[in-house]
Structure formats: C-alpha cells, structure tokens
Image 1 (spheres, rainbow, N blue to C red):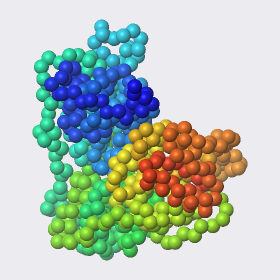
Image 2 (cartoon, helix red, strand yellow):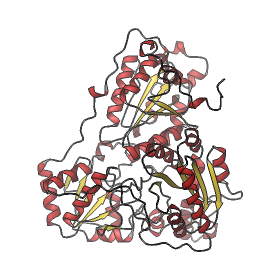
Image 3 (tube, rainbow, N blue to C red):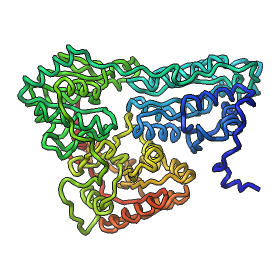
Image 4 (cartoon, helix red, strand yellow):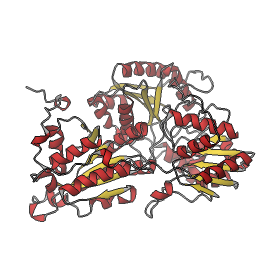
Length: 589
C-alpha cells in the first residue's frame, strides 16, 4: 500500500505515446517536446485533464510537477528559476480565480523581464457543458484580459490543434528578447475530449526563437567614437546576463575606455564590485558617489538600466547619453514600469551584452578568462560586536558564518548596504523581484535553489519579515521536493518601509514622529518564524538576537543545507535602512 504522505514523490509508470487518446495527452506531449522540465502548479479542476495526462500519460516526468500551496508561489518559483538559468519554467494556474491569485507574481516577472510559460484553463466555453454554479463562476470569455497589460503575448484557443500551436508559439515568444511571460488559456472541453487522429505536435527545432538583434556596424563605430573621445565616461549596467563570459567582456570594455561603472541592487551582479572602476555603494536608488559620477560624466552609456531617466534626473546629469535597450518594445499604456524616456543621442535596440560583444570585437579586445565561482566576502573586514543585531552587524555575522563557502545570494533586503559586499561573479547575487511585490522572496528562493542544485553553489536569501510572512508556505514546496536552501529572515518586526514614510509625513505636518510605528509594527505578539518554518517541513533556527549567535547559526544552517535540508533562520534585527535607501524612498520626484 502506498503511503499517502509520500505519494507525490512516486513516479507513475509512463504510458506509450500510442495510448494517447485525449486532448490533454497531446498538450502534455507538447510540453515535453518543447523541453519543459518542470511545471509549477496549485491543482484545480479547470485543468484536471492536463493534470491527469502529466501523471498518467507522461508519468510525472519531463516535465515534473512541483506542487505549490498558492498560485503566487508557483509563479515566484518559475521567476527564481529564470533568474538563474535565463530559461522559462512552465506554470499552470486554475481558471480565473487562480490567475487572480497569481497576478502580483506575474507582474513581478513582467517588470523583471524574465521568460515564463504560464498556462491556464477556463470552464467549458460551450454553456451547455457547464456544471451548475461552479463552472459558471470559473468560466471567463477573455481570461487573459486579467493580466494582458503585463504579459508579452496571450491566447485563448478553442480547438486542440490551435491549443498546441498556441503553446508552441508562447514558448517561442517568451524565449525571444526582450523577455517577459506569455499566457495560454485552455478550454476544459478541449482537454477532456477524445482525439480524432493524431494532432501535429511541433518539434522545437521547427520554431526556434530568433537570434537577438545585433548592433549595426555604424552603431558600433559611433559608440566606439563617443567612448574614445569621452574624458569621463560612465556606464550604467542594468539588466544583463548571468553569463561569466559576458561578465569578462564588460570588464574588458570598461578598462579599454577607462569608464566608471555603476550598478544597483534591483538587478543582479553584473560587474566586480571591488574593481577600481566600480562606483558604489550600489543601492536601490543612486548613492551620493554615484550621483556625483553621473553629474561629472561627459558621456553616459545606459545598458538596460532600470529607470535610466529617473537616475539621470536624481543625479542632475546633463551629458551626452547612449541608450542600449530593447525595453521600449514592451511599453504599453496600462503600467508605467517602462518609466520615462531617456534623451539619448544614440539608441541601440539590442541586448546590452550583444552590444558590448560587438564593441569588444571591433576594438579587438581580449577579455580575461571568465571568473570561476568563489566565496563572496565583504570588501573590508567586518568585526563582530556584542549587542543587538544592527544591519552592519548582520552583515558581519553573515560573513563570519559563510566562511569560505561558494554561495549565491538570491535576495537582499531593502535595508542592505550595497557597499559592504564584494561580488565577483554573475551568480554571486541575483537581484530583486522586478515589481517590488511583497511576498515574492520565499518562492523565488525555492526556484533559484532548484536551478542551482548540483551546481556547486549554496543558495542563500536574506528576506524581510513581511515578505516571508506573505510567502511562507512556499517553503513547503522546498521541503517536499528536498530542495536545499537557506533563508535568513531579516526580522525587524515591522513593515519598516512604511515607518520611514510615516516619519516623513509626520515631520512635514509637524506631528508626533513617535507614532510612526502604529499600524506598522509586527509585534505583540511577535511572529516565531522558526516554528512556522518547521510547520512547513523545513529546519527552523531562532529567534536570534545577537550577532555572534547569528554567525554560529549561519554556519550551522549552511551545514544542514549541504546535507540536503531547507533551512530558515529568524534573525531579529534593529529597524534601519542604508542612507541611500532611506533617502530614495522618501525624496520627492
């Protein structure tokens, strides 16, 4: 007898393709043909046919299902996967209600410009086939309209062949630069109807994504001339690849032209943060040294920088600008995530790393060998002290606990000081969530950890307490599928971001600043995150209230991660932000 508590790890016997008899069998076969490795989902009756086909026709292999406890977590897991691999994972969302649950996570993925194949389903389009009540409230005529402003392409096909074709097209579109999620909504009747003959299932080789555009020779020549003529060039490095080879090209280009380089914390590591040309500290908003570098620049090269216009305005920069981005292709009239226009004298519409590669080739540069994974360490030694855990002491405890382990920092909290840590490889730090939607962190950690398995790096995320509380049950998926990872809750027991705003409003209105915590503090009672983690099947450590004990807990947690565990540490920290973050959150535009 199968133990029901372990049955989701069981791999059902795979049936022969010749036994495919239902529309959903063909849809499942299409996912396998496309090379989809995982399907993250929370189950729902609207895709019960596809669910059966994944299990009983394909044997829950290639792709394998990842059961999630909330649709938002399913999307966040696919998001984390894409941040490491640059490739899409598939997600299945139930009807209109599951799609509405997932909407915030979809917006995060859209703003972060990551690929993702989102599949949905609706009740029978034919009203005569609907069950009383439930099929009526879970059927939508245009379900994709719920998220159309923040997906790249969507479709709601009415027949089996059209559904297969739409799936293949969505896979190609999401993998084509500029990247963003795509969405296909299946009719439940198409899934559950018997097939008449074998439908055509496209081979991936028949519809590969097109190569990303490359800059023209004249654009490369113009960029080279501008950089060579500039006396104080500055490069804003934004959304760029996780390729170590691309990293080496960036360093070579910066050194060739003597260009200062700015990075931020919203995007992942793209340039060595201890390089003499790097200007820091990086932050969610420009730090004062970065503002100064932009003001003094006589040429600014923006490489898909998130909100280039906002950064230039913050710094008061007025120099010549070259903008290398394809992001204008995703702009629409619903959201302003495309930000304001950057007034560039030269706009090169291609991926930034493709532009730099062409520039390096034209200049006959010889980049150094790609960096190997290595332990990430503070730029300057950090000493542990007695007392409560301030943010600097949190960083010191983390450095002490990590010792010489090669880790990927999947996420850093809003209060992090970007000038503390050295990043020397594109997988050292993966960046934020794109849309600043609270609750994304745990799921993105699970997805990134899955992608990093067996890759020689230990996944570590430092998450805010509000973020973890909203996304906590994503840890269950990590424990269920034995995905090793370490989550450290930077627990200031507050929605502290809004305390900063309440303090500013109180000062503006000459009202009591001491009341800023009301309606913000997550205390009385305090949340015991370690016990909540244990309830999800993970290892819980804490709560911890001093730096030295935290350092020991980090070392212990990493040892457990290396043994295969999912671990959470509850570190109770002082509520504070780095100066650049606090200033940026409350400055007027």
